[in-house]
Length: 203
Image (cartoon, rainbow, N blue to C red; front, top):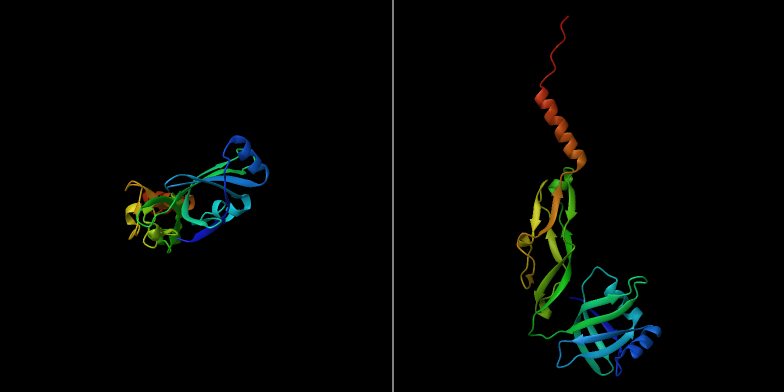
């Protein structure tokens, strides 16, 4: 999985007054969990742009002076009106411990059902996975090359060599639905077949 580097500074004061002062200065208060004790730090809000405002999944290299940590984003709090980032929680990665993270679904292939007029619907744009840090995928491929009209692609059909998908087996990732135009054409064809050939008029 690709990594993004965040440079920040450790926080000595973590009270409401100190936190408000940080935000007023354009900084975001953060906490790193997963180690012997939580690490409180802050970084400029713009430093999180490529981490938060993206559909992609990343690990995070947190640099606090001489200290460096590898982590993943666990939780984010944003302002309900301005959408400004208020707080971020991170979880430290350890080579021998599995972690859980959401990764995007990438559609690959061409569906025969879509070529015949069906409509592809992506039911799950992100999936939660569990794996060792070295095996975390950048994305999960959803191959639709065998999907006919009306077919559904379940999580059990996805390739998961080094990670585990944390969703029930009956979770639908994608499906090819019959379009209104195709449905109307099928209904008209059925009506025509039921009516049979038109009878010739008597002279």
